[in-house]
Amino acid sequence: MFLRAAAVVALLSASLSAQAPAAKAPATAATAELPDARTIVDRHIKAIGGREAVLAHKSMHASGTLSIPASGISGPVDIYGLAPDHVLVRTSVPGIGEIVDAYDGAHAWSISPMTGPTLKSGKELEQTKLDADFYSELRDPKKYTMKTVEKTTFDGRDCYKLSVKRIDGSEDFDFYDVATGLRAGSINTRETQMGTMTVSNVESGYKKFGPLTQASVLTQKIMGVEQKITIESVDYDKVDPSVFAPPAPIKALIK
Image 1 (cartoon, rainbow, N blue to C red):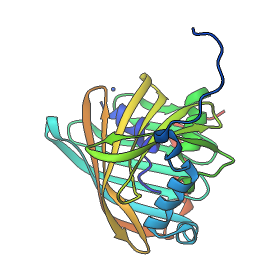
Image 2: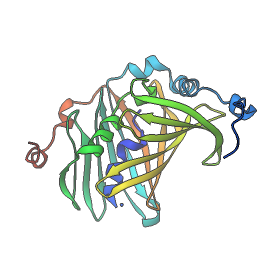
Image 3: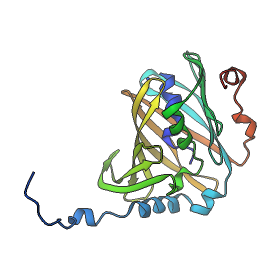
Image 4: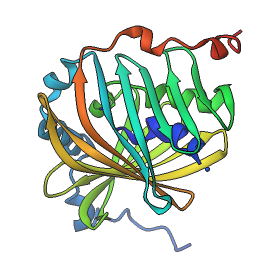
């Protein structure tokens, strides 16, 4: 819900960078035994508290730390979400300054000391809108087409790999832990200000925040750099919508 990796990709990247015809063969045993993708996702939803518990909340504010272990850099991070599709991520990076990345339901924008105020457009804007889906955990069939690809190893864990095709035409790969049912991570390809990027995300440290169990640690690998978000607290249904209002420098860019 609040740690969907793709929703913070823009922020973090800005912080740095023939045989003869034959009868159709029956499915192999391995393929036949793969659970349906919807079943796998529903198991995850049940494990984190259930569909009703997810839908019970209209907003959330998560606070924690963003770190880049190899550089010894760390700073505070705040993630705000508001149904149906508002998101804002704010962090302060030592030696760089404050970075903000947001989508307010209509405009996707960012402000950083390196790029100044910028608006997203085209494919990047379309992807950001989907990434901002407050209830993305539920994988609404109107927005996603899913298929179980294989049983494989991800982050040292036995996982089911799911192809997740989105209505914007992009494809993600999600991994769900076979033992626990919880999502273990994902591989996402996104358009950013620095070009097309593929990001590997590992979700771990699941713990209960209020009625929901969520991953408290998100580890990303992007352009060979590992970045980690560690969530320390989560508040639900206390976010003022004004949090997502574009600041003056962004308003000046909106036509």
